[in-house]
Image 1: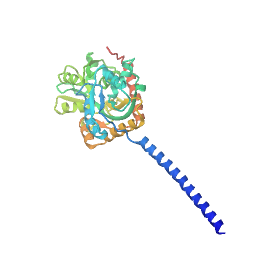
Image 2: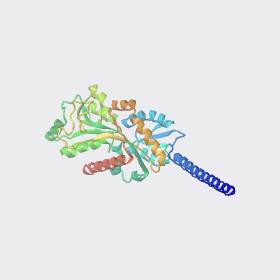
Image 3: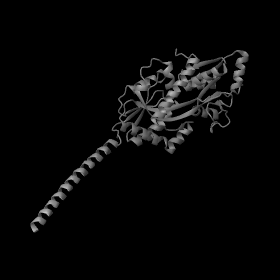
Length: 342
């Protein structure tokens, strides 16, 4: 009996050892799996500076917003973020520079989405395919367009300008910072909706356009709230309408275009952040999360609000859908107004 009991105990000990070995093997496998998953889910950590391409000259609203964002974004990413102004060709040169970059996270692009959308119709064939060569990260923000005139002008409302033009046959002149920009498309939309004779005068940038409106050489200009607010407050310009759903808290006495009888007249300068297509998931996630974190910082919100820019983020798909809707809206105006790049 003692011999049998010894055999049973030996057998049970053997089984116990085998079970422990089996359990250890399973646990080891689970640990390896969890480690592998943690590596896959780990944040991308950049090891050199990141270039933010702004496809316009320095001093404009896009450049300003880019620079407001770049410093806190550098802190989020742990590397410097350098604003690289590559102007020319209505933004095409800067966009092309981004599409020609490696999809490694070290190049991002912040275009004005109005001009970016307009180029899809105005400048065909483009040297890039925006749907394939770039990927959306997040919406950045928007600033509604304000219609301004010289404060020295004897006319004080849009309807007065329209009435004078129809009575005298003298075209209304309107300026913009360039063909296809939101300021240009807004003026053409007024022309289409009112069937009024209007002459577009394109400038190389919003600054020169604004100077000539102040001086009375040109009748009017649509421009983002932030770029005209100081001039309105100083009395050099008069704001006569705003192209938003509701009145602006910064210009509470200025009526919306809808109030003046222009249904669905919503025009804004807007911005988004893009990157070369093909970013690894961890890289795109890190960039997007970092940018959204910056957009939520009180100081960034305050500084952009001072420029009349309302910040808001989005999913990549929401930004892509917005861009497509802008392309459709701009295409309709460009075709109906027969806008051509000379």
